[in-house]
Image 1 (spheres, helix red, strand yellow):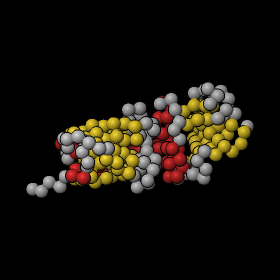
Image 2: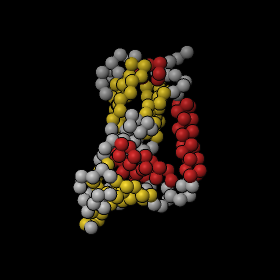
Image 3: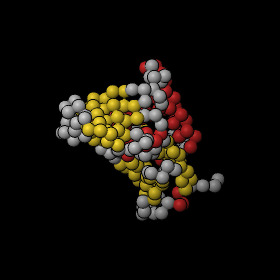
Image 4: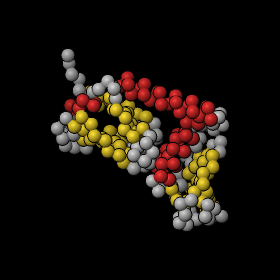
Length: 220
């Protein structure tokens, strides 16, 4: 039996929020270095590090909370048929999958199907312009709030969220400032992922969308 030394890793990209599957050769990893693996969107990368080819450290920027999480695996973990799931410590959402390619594809497909079913049951699927983008945006905003990275520069952290067909409206309950986040396409989501933290501006109307990432449209 020939040992190829190739294992698979899937990462939910911090920037574009898509799952990307990578085939990585054990023999191409440089020992004692942070080996970078870049997403095809060119805006994000994660790192794999090993000192002895027996244990491995994976550093992943999180698509959920915007922070960086570190995961540790043994060489046996990398080549198991039953994979391993790395989760965000704040939102508990999946951000890393390690193991067999077939298992990874099945896992991603199952999770995707479950999310769509929940949205259909709640009656949201036909309401939003882009349901998948909307649910990812909601998860991102929720994670930022949990990590205390959603606030108004008037000093308030009391932010109310309203959902619309093609956007999310964040409103400061103290000064009534508003931040509109569009959720029509992948570029809108990508721009939201770049916002870290999400800051509303006192007595102002601001907007995050694909046309202009941080546009202040007017003072109110």
